[in-house]
Length: 106
Image: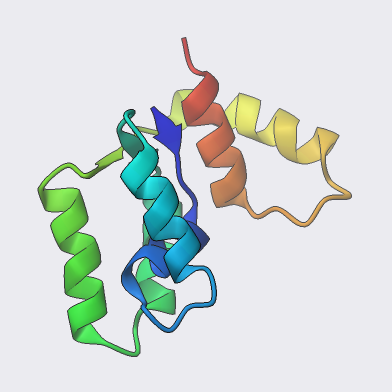
């Protein structure tokens, strides 16, 4: 599974995004499914709030499982807190640590 954050999700949908072509090319070359976490999906929806059609396209990606939602729950909190503490000097929000946690869960 390829973990995807809000930025590439937005770029895949928004043709005016400067990374749109690059993200489309990469998506076309992937064999693995895409996965994300609810916080990153929420941020992408916010960034696409200029257009209901863009948001609907993102919902369609989730609905068709082109992008799978990876689970997070209270059992993930200790590891997410640990990652946030360890990397506190880096500009990453909680959703980024959620993605990290989801991707490393055994």
